[in-house]
Amino acid sequence: MPSALPRRIAFLLALAAGAAGAQTVTLQGMLGSKALVIVDGSAPKSLAAGETFKGVKLLSILGDQAVVEVEGKRQTLRVGDAPASVGGGAAGANGSRIAITAGSGGHFLTQGAINGRAVQFMVDTGATSVAIGLRDAERLGIDYRKGVPGMGSTANGTVPMWRVKLASVRVGDVEVYEVDAVVLGASMPYVLLGNSFLSRFQMKRENDLLVLERRY
Image 1 (tube, rainbow, N blue to C red):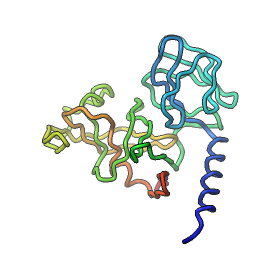
Image 2 (image 1 turned 90 degrees about the horizontal axis):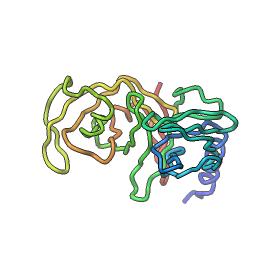
Image 3 (image 1 turned 90 degrees about the vertical axis):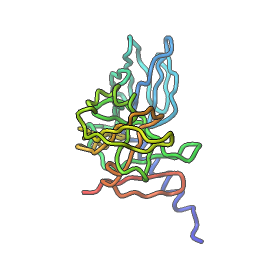
């Protein structure tokens, strides 16, 4: 059996390289005088002005906005907006690689955005397309009733569904355009990141790390 040490070293080097680059930061909400911040898909962290988490420093809070700083670069975040890339010379969603770490239940969960609005995805290689619950679709402003109607199966039985086209789906620094999706007439805890998005990438899993490399 080959040694796991070289792979472990490569993984640590990849983490070090990522630390020197841009940080993906999401403002999830406010908790009194503190901001709930998600950094690179982490669990939400409560920060007061002046505190730092994973290299992201919270400078100030005003209403539903917060100003953060990474490597001397400042960014204003707003609750509900898509994740922002801060620091490392980031220039928008022009990346080609996504790395997602499995959660405690073995599922690959990650923050992202649909049509510029923040969502939480769960990778589902068994889903034909991106699948969105009714509540999320309404929050995202998707006019799903203009989509193609049909019926879909869920764990709770058969429900109405509508086939739609999403203008953009973003995870980290990677953005994909014109993505097929379905809106299900039921509530869902996550947006399922299905094969209408995943098929545009080469997927490789190594232990608890899932890496997506964009196809060109």
